[in-house]
Structures are given as structure tokens and as C-alpha cells.
Length: 79
Image (cartoon, rainbow, N blue to C red; front, side, top):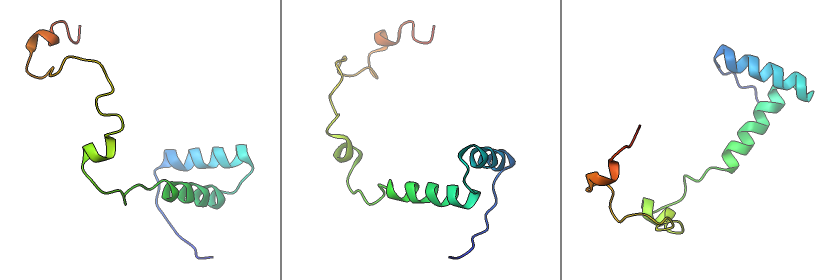
């Protein structure tokens, strides 16, 4: 197995050390597991427009047709 050196902020190092103690694992094992999970969830190979990737949920809410041009719908927003 190859060795990899990386730089992490102090707070991540502390979280890693705490998690390692809590789980009884070494830091390398935790990082290997995290990288494996990260790469297994990689969806960058998906192709298409935003609509193509989300058409299963497009139109799934019930709302006025276009809130952006009707200022009346913004009355009281943020109050």
C-alpha cells in the first residue's frame, strides 16, 4: 500500500482523532473508508441538462406559475 500525505485544518485533525478513538480505528482506516464512500457516490459521469437530471421531480410542487414576475407574491417576504 502506498503512503499519502495531506494537509488538513486543525479542526479536521481534531475531529479525526476524536472519531478514531471513539470507533477504535486508526486514522488511515477512517480516511480510506471516507475516500471509498466519496468515490462510490460520484455522479459526475451523468450527462444532460439540469432539467434532464431532475425531470422526475420537475413540476412536483403546487404553486403559482411564475413568482418572479408578480411582485404581489413577495408581499411580506422576509418579515
